[in-house]
Image (cartoon, rainbow, N blue to C red; front, side, top):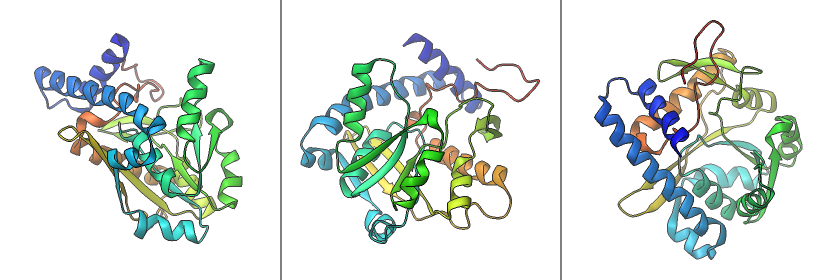
Length: 259
């Protein structure tokens, strides 16, 4: 856990320079509390009866924003940034949606990999696409009218990435959200998940499709728009972003490393 704590602490230094060291340490502790709870709660999400999952995770916005697309067999992108409610959102949405697809990073341990795959594909018809294969395999799911649960905010290296600001610092970001939306004419529905430490419950919001996305300003502007949205949400619930990821690992040419 110590290497992850170092990464998270450095991320907080980069993103919240206005906070003093003591405030960032409190935020770090709150983050690891929330992160640990999200791991524990996978036991409910992946193994408990469906009614227990519904008790743990409430859902709003599905009926008005996503259900009509599902009924019309219109594929869409469910944009789900890396907050600790990520698995809660995925489980709750798959309970309501007959079929869907998402990208998946295989685990190095085969037993853990099988556990994660079974947990994430527990409800209804969930298709897990290996992230190593890129976005092309998603095309058949688009043609089948399935929603795509997509995570837009990790550093996967220089290849195919654009450097767009995140908390004022250039961050390597895959522009796939804008590419998929533009090429396949897909609506993009942000999925905002939050955890309430007072109640121990999660709430998942299916928000209306982004207006005029990706727009006429190009991939970089559209990708920066996504990062601004993620940043705004993070400022609202700073302990719940996935700070243990090296979000600023890849640097623009000539810039020194940040970790």
